Length: 427
Image (tube, rainbow, N blue to C red):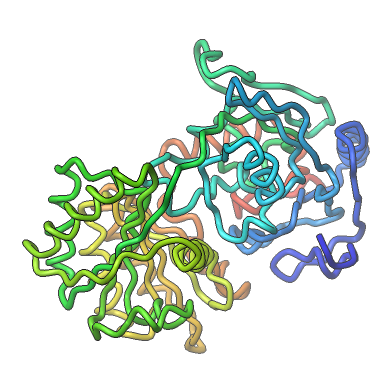
């Protein structure tokens, strides 16, 4: 982190740690956890802390385990398309090294210059291009983890076909620092695409966008991302220059590949748009396209928003979910969605004095009926106790809780962050 590592800068949901433990090696991580385990101290591991607003407030917070200095590439085999990197390394730092060999790790979470590898894995935060390349777990080959008692364990490996039976590595993806502290991660990487382009499409009606997307899925068009935004979100993230069409919805189709591929995909997309009544703008290339991607990518962080809800629904239900949100909240809500992956974020900066429990429960019930879920990614701390922060608790959720009780019986790692009713080790 760039700022001084004082307890105040590492507060989580208003709770300030009593101590800050800065570590630079996995041995120091192990020693820190041994100390915590021996003294039943509650520890929260943090990289740059870009996702610390997600989850319940901690029930205890004795020490912040500052991992940002646990940096560097452990091993890089460009010919094998494999890299092993320490958890405190930022994604931007890793991508810079990979780009020198014309390769990249195909994930794009918000703020790559701040987001650390450990935090990305622990939060399972991918980004818009998951539409083409897949989620974090699909690129992860293995992890090295410090267990709650300080034991260092390696899961997975550094080759693509290395898994027999249950893949323990995936347990740590989305575990939010509750099962162990990730100190290293091994990934498979890919060659950088030759060119990138984005095609903006507009519509007055969500039904037209839904029709377009359903045809897109059945076509030979292969977008890297298909981001659906309402006009409120476009204005919020500084894309007002794209709002000249005056339509309330914009679908941004991004493509990666060879120039010939991109030209064909653009032509086919424009044809589909004309058939479904969408307006197509000029294709955006080069530096302007890079800047556009960054704004859309970073918008998912909800920076500046007081309330962020993440809906997880089948991709066929995204437009219906957006419609439902806007019926409740009108134009005050900024909406952005990975439209072909079913991930929709609603953000609001203006809040009422009372927590919107009924609204959130209604949206949650709707998503569950569709086979999905709703997560409250960001909300005022005083609201969280009354809100279904992690949404509907499925069987896999209860399995995760049993794993937490088994792997961390003293409940020292991020206590209460995922399971609000956890009992503190000290009573």
